[in-house]
Image 1 (cartoon, rainbow, N blue to C red):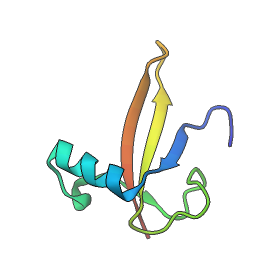
Image 2 (image 1 turned 180 degrees about the vertical axis):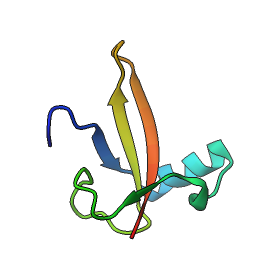
Image 3 (image 1 turned 45 degrees about the vertical axis):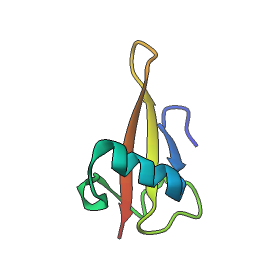
Image 4 (image 1 turned 180 degrees about the horizontal axis):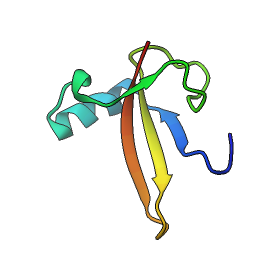
Length: 70
């Protein structure tokens, strides 16, 4: 992992279900990330959801979610 690369974490099924319920969305409404993206942690599969943590210029952590596609 590179120092400038955002932190990518595969989330668990229960956390994913809570996320969808809280945001009132379905899986297909999440932004996509390709399975061959080099930033993904090892062991990821198509359909898994990735939590991406990025630090902005003020030091605040912003969280984004992506679903893995082919």
